[in-house]
Amino acid sequence: MVTTHAAPRAQVLLASNRGPVSYALKDDGSLEPKRGGGGLVSGLSAIGSDVESVWVCAALGEGDREAVRRGVGEHGVRMLDIDAEVFSDAYNGIANSVLWFVQHMLYQTPLEPVFDAEFRRQWASYEAYNRAFAQALAAEAGDGARVLVQDYHLALVPGMLRELRPDLRIGHFSHTPWAPVDYFRMLPDDIARQLLRGMLGADRLGFLTRRWASAFMASVAGVLPAGEGELFGAAEGESGRCFFRHAPAGSLPARDTDIAVHSLGADGDFLRRRSHEPDVEERMAALREQIGAGRKTIVRVDRTELSKNIVRGLLAYRHLLEEHPEWRERVVHVAFAYPSRQDLAVYREYTEEVARVAADINSSYGTESWTPVVLHVQDDFARSLAAYRLADVALVNPVRDGMNLVAKEVPVVSDAGCVLVLSREAGAYEELGEDALVVNPYDVTGTASALYAALSMGEGERGERTKRLAAAGTALPPRAWFLGQLEALAP
Ligand code: F6P
Image 1 (tube, rainbow, N blue to C red):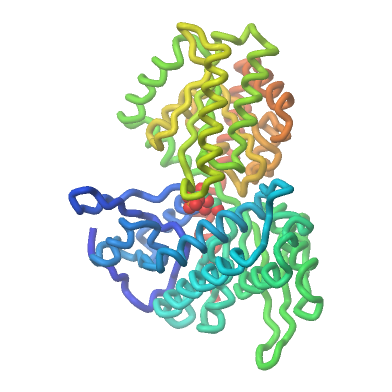
Image 2: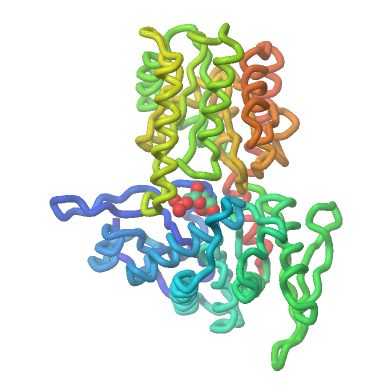
């Protein structure tokens, strides 16, 4: 660890809410660093030390704020100490309770959404939080530098940054899905327009799949007044370049924003190596004890996230046990559901519901020698890899997901090959759909049938599918994802 602050006037800058490291403040006053997780952080971390860069991120909690105060940090990381209330409004209030819900289509009527005075107050914080990032980036960036802004937390940054520093090359990448236009326009008109204009401040917008890119284009077409510019190309087709040509406005000349697809895959080399280290072997032994000899394993690993659809996955497993009693005692569902966004009541309630449904299955079907669901909620990467290695079936059934790297990781790591049961609503479906057993995530009995087919599949077919899934899932490792965007932003 070294003291920040990173060298000013960088040529490559990254910006994301969550950074590569976060600090816990211990009782003895010391700071314990913890690596950030999730697809976004894994993708950006692939930058490697050969590209000199500055990564601007938010201080997420008291530990991070204390680290900023003490000047503790990693080389090349600039953590922003944003006022705690502004941060909470922006992150919990707007980004995770509104924008995440819109892009994942998670609202449930009649109660939500409600865009009231409180929403407007929080929106002002979201603007302030975006402005803090734009100002920090403007201060750090060298002449003509390339800036890669990440995700829905920072949708306004490209526009704000362009005003401050028109010389920069600005990219924005969405790690989430993009909602169909009729869902997106649930947002108040002025807010929907502000979001799109903020993103279109970039020179290039990146999406994980063609589907999300073309949904974005439909939102632009449906929400922005015609006079603001024109869309060219079609993200869904093979027709080459897609872009939005901004109409000249006042002293601003016409310019283009490219709309591009950069898929993100698993890091095969890293996973193969890491999953054979001693801590993983140790956890495999412990899991084998819990599963019991000779049983098949259905594995899922997720943040406890509404969009991941964990409860319907459990209900599908329950239906399988009910309809196919011959599988009782012969299969175990290993479900890792790691707590996430626990500041939000709806996430806390969902976490409780997952535990309740799992316990209910165990009390309905369990026996002295068989626990049908092994649920773990303590985040442990080595144990996740151990479960991947033991998986006969991987269950990935989100109601919507930007990509889902678990779907790409398990086939690489599983020892005996595994069948992937995959939601057609995960971004990974575009690349893995042919070799997975594809499900409609709302269809519990359909998912149960897919689990049954997966458990019953012969070894030959399973092995062939696993090989193809592993090849497709590692074809675009994080470093290629990152460098592809960086190169595309070159002047
Ligand atoms: O946009 C998706 C994403 O940033 C993922 O990369 C990550 O898994 C998740 O959201 C993390 O959410 P949070 O930072 O709120 O824990």
